[in-house]
Amino acid sequence: MNLELSPSVKYWSNFFHPILMWVLLFASVYAAYLGLQVQRTRNAQGEEKKELIKGRYNVRHYQIGSIILALMISGAVGAMAVTYINNGKLFFGPHLLVGLGMTSLIGFSASLSPFMQKGANWARVTHILLNFALLGLFAWQAISGVQIIQRILTQA
Image (tube, rainbow, N blue to C red; front, top):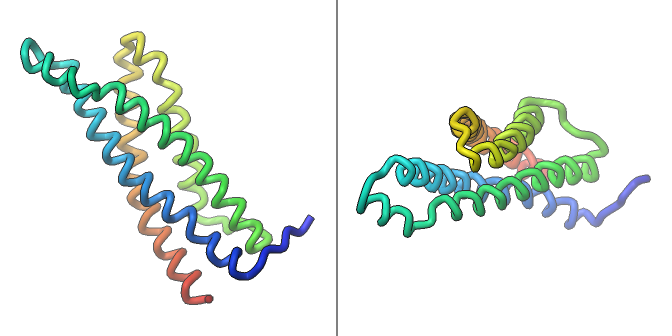
């Protein structure tokens, strides 16, 4: 099956993934901030703890994390679909491989939630380590993605 789209649709479809991923990069930094606030709340005492609880950092962290999980996975799959539709193949390289790895890491990280809710410290530490690794990979992906966009723009 060969899906033929208009040249305009093919061209502009190249930009949905990078825009989404830049939004998710910033959302991930915000989620990290919220996660650190959750940790701060957990370790606080007395009045400080009461004040931090009002921020509902745990709820906000869980909600934004769920949104990031859903959009990152669908954005990665969508990017591969657009690349395949536009070029008839995927480009095997570091950006694709790291993106697939990140998709797996975010799934593993999210799967730790039930254990963290039951107080498993090993799950909390693993979740934090995975997410900071994800942030580092995300920053690298942003740079390599800009290089890919520059190639697309010069071919237009």
